[in-house]
Image 1 (cartoon, rainbow, N blue to C red):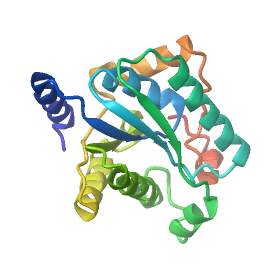
Image 2: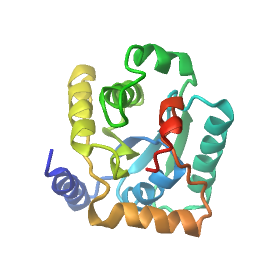
Image 3: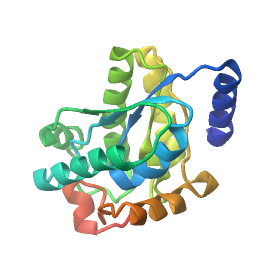
Image 4: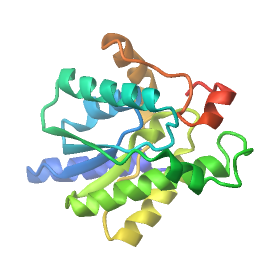
Length: 205
């Protein structure tokens, strides 16, 4: 998984050489994290954005982030088609999944459970939509463990019979570019991941 960026570059080069534009399902956590990812990958893939984030436990916050995601897609120039799908919004499924881990530190087991919850839905929708690959924007955050996220993604890909494209969007100054694009498009940059537990910690990501 340490060669995630190299593997992605090889995949892009392969399809570009063949003149093929594959379909990529991207789980998106928010517009700022999506910004660089879409700018970069929409050159090479037809993209389906899955906004599935039951961890965002405040409904107004959830709706605002979804609206910003839609606005970004409408305003960001892109070579290939980008389609937005909203997943089911059910915070109870998040609370059920992390029950017993409420007091875990940020970045611990509770976060891993949350990653898997969202990536599982991404794998399911990838199969449903017959997309060639799926991945998540979560690896762009300096506070997220890209290696762990990729491990989960690969395991779920095997389980669902689909292909996961490992990523570490912090590479190639991806996080820095996401900040620049957030300013350029005046995107709302929240200062916590989404759940009530991360809000208490007030972690910036």
